[in-house]
Amino acid sequence: MSLWTAAEAAAATKGTLQGDWTCDGVSIDTRTIEPGDMFVALKAARDGHEFVAQALAKGAGAALVSHIPDGIGADAPLLIVADVQSALEDLGRAARARTSAQVVAVTGSVGKTSTKEMLRAILEGQGRTHASVASYNNHWGVPLTLARMPRDTEFAIIEIGMNHPGEIAPLAKQARPHVAMITTVAAAHLEAFENIQGIAHEKAAIFEGLEPGGIAVINADIDTTAILQAIADDLGHQKTLFGEMADAWGLQSVQLSGNTTVVQATVNGAPLLFKIQSAGRHFAMNALGALASAQALGADLAVAASDLGQWVPYVGRGAREVIYLDPVEMDATLDLIDDSYNANPTSLGASLDVLAAAEVVDGVGRIAVGRRIAFVGDMKELGPDEIALHRAIANHPAMQAIDVVHAVGPLMRHMYEALPLEMRGEWFETSDEMAAMTRQLIDAGDCVLAKGSLSMGLAKVVDAIRKLGHPAPQSQDEDA
Image (cartoon, rainbow, N blue to C red; front, side, top):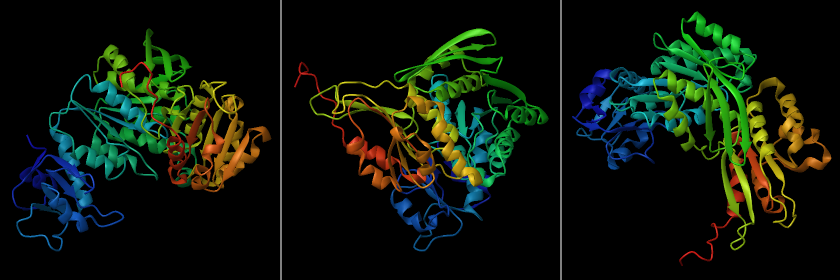
C-alpha cells in the first residue's frame, strides 16, 4: 500500500490537488530523492519551489507546494497548500494518528542520536520499526520523520532537539509518544538560556506530548533530576528513573575494555548484564535508559539486551576505527575515535574519559611509545561563561591519563594555556591548519580522539588522519 494517496494527503493538509497520484516516501532534498517520493518544497537556505521541476524529472510522485512554480505544467502531480511547513506538520500528525505504533521520543543535551540508534537496534528485532534519519530532530525533521512513517509501523523512535526555549513542546505534541526519555541535561545552548535549570525545563517539555498513561524516563544522576521529576508529576505521568541513584533501573558498574563496555545493572532488584561494542560510560548510561524505554513500550528485555550488542556509534559521534599506517606492517596501526560532530563540556568530558581508558601500544612507531592524543576544538553556544567552561576542561580528571592535547580555535586556547607544558601539543586557529600538521603529530601505537563543535570542522582532522592510512594488509597465507 502506498504511503500517501493524493486524497489522503489533501485531506490531511486541506490542500488543493492537481492530478491523481500516490507516493511511497517523502523528501525535502532533490539530491537524495527517490522515484515515487513526495517532494516537499520547504523554504530554507533556498526556496524549494526552485527545485520542483528537478524533483519531478527525477521521478517524484508529487510535489507539496504553496504555488505552482514557473515552468510546471497543468498535468504535473501537485498538492497546493497555504504554507508548506504547516502542511508538512499536518502530514506528520495524520501519519501519527493512523498508526497503532508504540512511540518513544528522545531528547537530551547529549546522546540523543546515539540513544535513538540504540533503540532502533533494540526494537527492530521485536517489530516493524521506524526512526528518525541522522539527526532529523528540529521543526522540519520531526514532522518529516512522522510523515514518512509506514502505516504498519509497530515501534517508532522520534528524536527531538532544540536550540531555543519553546521548541520542544510543539514537536512532542506532534509525536504524541507513549514513552519520553531525557538522556541528560548539560551546559549546551546556554546562549539561549539563563542557566542549566532553564535547559532542564525546556527538555522536560517533551513530557507535554506524552499520551495519557505515558511514561517519563529520566536520568537519575544529574543535578536537575528533581526538576524533571516535578514536571512529570505535575503533568500526571508515570516515571522511570535510570542510573546509579535509581532504584528501578540501577547502574551498578561500568567496565571499559578496549572497544567494549560491559555494564552490570539491576532492574527492580534483578541483575542485568549487557555489553556494548563501543567504549564509554556515557554509552552505558544511554543504553540503560534505552532498555528502560524499550521495556516500557512492551519490548522483551532479554532480547533487547542481546540486540543492543548490534549497535555501533555513528561516524562523528564516537565511532572507533583502526588506521593502518603501513601497507605491509600489520602492527603499525593507530586507533581513531571520531567524535567530531559536536561538543559541549559534558560530552567532551565523556569523550576524554573514553580516551583515558583506551589501550595504546608501545614499540611499533617511530616514537616507540604509544600515546593518548586529543584534538579538541571550540565548544559553541555556551554563553557568558564560555571562557571559564573551556579553561575548566584542562582540570578534567581524565586529563591525567592523556599524553598530548592539540587545540583548535580561540576559545580552546584558554584550555590549552591552562594545561601543563608537557601536555601541550599544537594550537591553531582553524582545523585546516591542524589537519595539515597531522602526519607529524601522530604515530603508530597511538589512540587519537577528535572532538569539537560542528562549526569548528574537526572532521577535517579526522579525514587527514584517515588519508594517512592504507587498506588492512592481507595475511600471506590468504588466497591471492
